[in-house]
Length: 246
Image (spheres, helix red, strand yellow):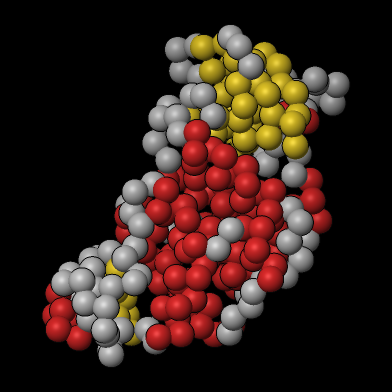
């Protein structure tokens, strides 16, 4: 098989020396891969089977798994592991992809988005919450569930006094439409502006902005529930530790 670009999302030890990997690839989408002997100290597969590794791979297609034949590292994203904040956010990003993306559905745009997110994170020294929220907004939009944050999702009203965010409805509700979701969450105009700013800002510009931490925490909590709702999951394990750190 020809060279295939991919990023290791998750690894699981299999027997004494092998790994089962979830790899998100540009050409094949998310696939399950058996890496035989990857835990052996002299294995040529050690570097290319580490979590976060972005590599060119060669696979053989089997009945249950793809079997890894070779891998050459393009980027290890080793810098992510140098700071606890980067590491925890990085694991969350990988878990979101692993638990939200169907198997074997290639999406080059989404793949390049993952590469860019990890590349940005590997050089980030501050504004971690801003980056996290920007990632969540862009990711959920790329997979087809972009929240309506600029007008009422129900009636299109833009002149809203009592802002509410409805996870179930998929965005902001105005005063007249609040009855459509009694569980909607109150937000203010500042939080709405933060959502809009972080939805559209390029990752490269995250370092140049900063918002109130309390507002960011409230927004992140809403987005967590929003993503879980639309990808039909109960929780992201890595996010529990990440939130306790923040």
